[in-house]
Length: 159
Image (tube, rainbow, N blue to C red):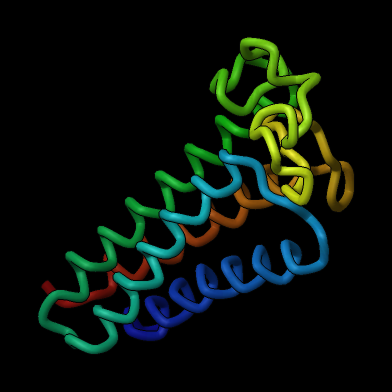
């Protein structure tokens, strides 16, 4: 497979992940703070992929390397979030039940007068999605797969 096709595949993968999270969010799966963090690397990889496809062969290797780096960062955030969900380590106090009293507070208690506010979603809540894995777990796996595709594109690109 050519570098260009691999870049297109990796770009489409990040786009599919982003579309998926927005679909699930519209179906009522509210994201936590760390879930939102995980979206940024895929948005960056999507932009890098579009740029690589528009510019052409001149900088494919550099842009593919940047694409690999961004999804690797995404995998790191997803791995961190997965560990927080499974209570392997503490998460940010601002979105974890172990923080300074956030665990038992509702959105209206955190923001007075916000009775219509969506429920607060804590980052350390383990919510299995498919086959006992959470969305953060699946994002970690998908990010690593996309990183391999980006690296293969970088190797096949002309210098």
